[in-house]
Amino acid sequence: MASSTVTSSQPDRPPRPNLAFRQLRGRRSPAEFAALVRRAAREIGERVSCDARYVGRVEAGEIRCPNYAYERVFLHMFPGRTLADLGFAPRSSVRGRGARPTGEAPPSRATHPAYAAGETRGAFEPYDTQDPYDTHENDENHEESDVLRRAFMTGGSATVAAATLGPLGLTIDAAAAGRPVRRAGSSEAAALEEAVRRIRLLDDRHGADGLYRRAAAPLRAAYELLDAGATRQTTADRLHSGAGELAISVGWLAHDSGRFDDARSHYAEALATARMTGDPGLEAHAFCNTSFLARDAGRPREAVRAAQAAQRVGRPLGSARLMSLLALREAGGWAGLADRTGCEQALARAQALYERGRSDADPEWMSFYGEAELEGLEAQCWSTLGDWQRAARHARRAAQLQDPHFTRNIALYTAELADDLARGGRPDEAAVAGMRVLDLLDQVQSSRVQTMLAGTARVLLPHRRAPGVSEFLERHASLPRAV
Image (tube, rainbow, N blue to C red; front, side, top):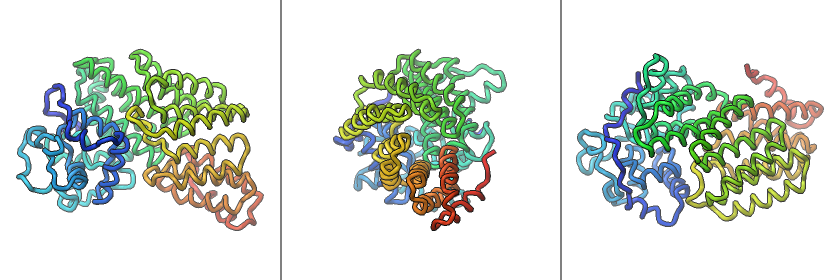
């Protein structure tokens, strides 16, 4: 199986912190520094999925040498410095093979065998051309890894598992064959953490509908590993946290694709994992998503209670941004209960907490939460309360502020805007916004977005003669129906 090539040649030994890299980050938070890395990558035509967790792993010494894509970005960010100056180990000592001669540039896209063979990235491929933890034993595996990532969106569950979890693909094979699953080490824990990241990247770009069933195999593999045990307690802790986060990610894919019962089950699984291991961060995340699901499923009182539970367990973590998001979850529940005062109080608290800014305590999974999400969630609250004009104002601002990487969210906010405009008596503007959403549906597969758009179309039916409305309705009617 392809995943058998994704193994680490390094022993399971304590990493040495990269103090040089930490000094370069300065007073920026890991999330802020990760944003600078992504911006630098765009300047030189690279696409890397750097986030706060990746920065943390570099600084902790768990990434002893970056892959070639990251190497090009880091050397661009810090001209005149070498990888050694940045605190990294020689590639030969990490890979167990000869390093490039000093001064030789890392292979470019033009000369890389995957690109020479025409294997350029497709629409559903996540950013990196190889594993961010650089665990491949030789450069020939880059092309294979490139192909496997594309297979995540097009292949069967076995291929998807290999593309998503690397070493954990072996776990799936062993479990399917009835063989004992070997105890997990750091490479499996790293693969599990990377699986969560890749699923989130794909979801941010394309929505959940094409991902949910394919993500079930990696989740089964993760829990097989938990049952098999780990070589060290630190590895066991990483596996439990990773499995819980993966359960939440898979639950979100079910949630976003309208499979509410499945989502509830996955969130409950993550919550149980968090409580068994005493992980308050994971518990707050599970309650956060449970609150959001309860709101969408028409259980607003449960949404309020779950959000309040998340705030109780999350407060000691010290992240104002986390508490801001949880206050927004509570506000959504109050809006569902038609409690305008409760909603406004929670929204004010969310805004005040958000303005405290980012910090090192912010969870890695909150990378999506910025000003655009704050505006979008507030728009949903006002929409639920029937204040269409106010809702449209916030939805418009959310769509304008959203980072282009989050294609699904741009479609979601614009669909919210179209619906608010339609219900607020502005059919021509609603049709324009609806057309923008239709333009994005080639890239986005989200039942939430399609359901919102269908509701907008129903509201606009009596306004066929308004400018642009007929064209929108005809184009919407021609969409393929979800099976």
